[in-house]
Image (cartoon, rainbow, N blue to C red):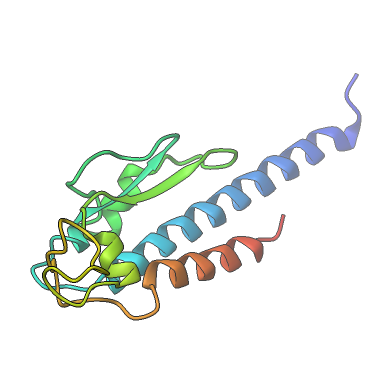
Length: 143
């Protein structure tokens, strides 16, 4: 026999779970959007290479991040208790994030045999900064 308040309590719990899920999903999407927008652009290849996936990282070079709607279509409605991956598989994405090259043949160069991939290095790592902001947004979600 269900108590009078039992139905209302279950409804309130479902509502809170839905609100928390939607807030978490929005934080993921905004975090990836921030990363995409701040990706240094020369030809736009690196910016177009971002993917958002669930359960395992993407192995694709072609991103699903052309628009925020493109990203939203790739992430399921329910993200609670799921691992969300934001990946970019271009070989020079680490060079853009961390820097580390001076020119062709430089021993400190990163990437493919010391070749310069791009002059568009983001100072101080835009991905790391965006991830910190996203983590704060997630921490601020009321559960």
